[in-house]
Length: 219
Image 1: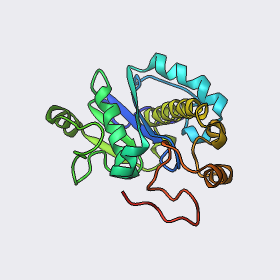
Image 2: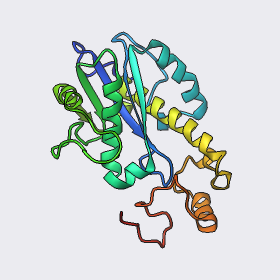
Image 3: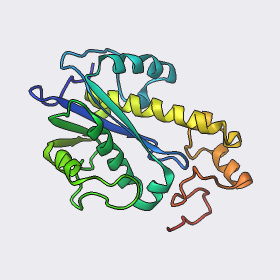
Image 4: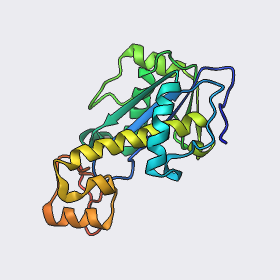
């Protein structure tokens, strides 16, 4: 079983993202605060769980969480601020939505929750001064493979993955030829062949290498 928390004395949120490596669709982040006594033998990094298991765990997480939030950042914003900045921003937006506000945040990966260059002040949601104050006041730790070590990060990974999968299932109905219901926007051979045949959509990330032989677009 994963560790229940990083600092027991704090109201601690875990946050993670899904869809960072996709060619289409949003990058989706979730943040969640679980009770300190939360236990689940099955919960793990969402990538290690089957789709069926993720769908079974999600309602348990939502019911038992003290608070949780999910944020989608769309391809246009990803293209303007880059995928790393978009991933962090989506996690920050999710943390801002939590109520009660966490006293500590643990983040999957090795990128700081608050980057040295500060906050993105163009495109999409612009953080207010009060929101920036809230985010910078919360101490945080980034943990490599945190989603396979700590309950709250694993829970956030499951929420981010399942909510993003639902989003991709929905837009699949609009563009079924790309089979996003199956590939979820990832760079599969099938997805790239569909791009080659049908072209791009408003959901594709223009700054990504959509075809192997293609140079990335620069906005």
